[in-house]
Image 1 (cartoon, rainbow, N blue to C red):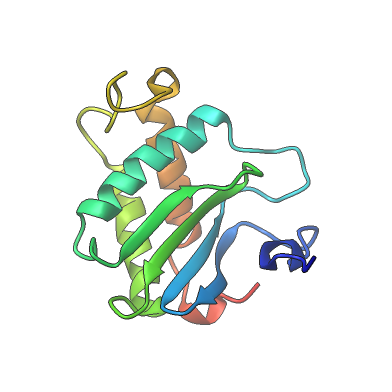
Image 2: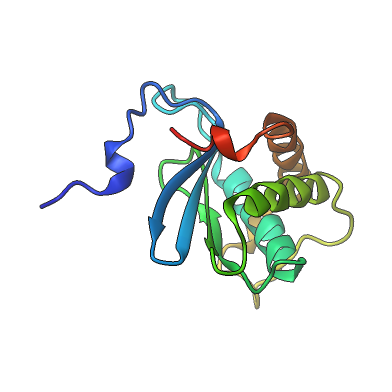
Length: 152
């Protein structure tokens, strides 16, 4: 079998940041790396889940909501994937969108999106303070990120 694209990235050299993972037709996948791989320093389940709920809600309700395909955690617990339709959003626009969305996530006020047994199968581990802290961290990390920095 062929090795999938994400297994071809040297995770020993990868550092936190924002990367272009792949292009599949019009679908573009960004790799939002929060933690350095292979260090044991992982996002907790509560951090992953909480950031996912806040960011997915903001992105799917934001100015480019029709371009958003998916926002969700990586199984390796080091970050998230963001998939979007490149016919509606350029890579440069997607970088700016993520900067805006993480700033909004860091400042989010109100109830945690989807925090009920009806809306989520594991709502118990959702924590708005954790989500805001991780959004603030990533907002600062990508503050000056440019499309030229998307390469691994």
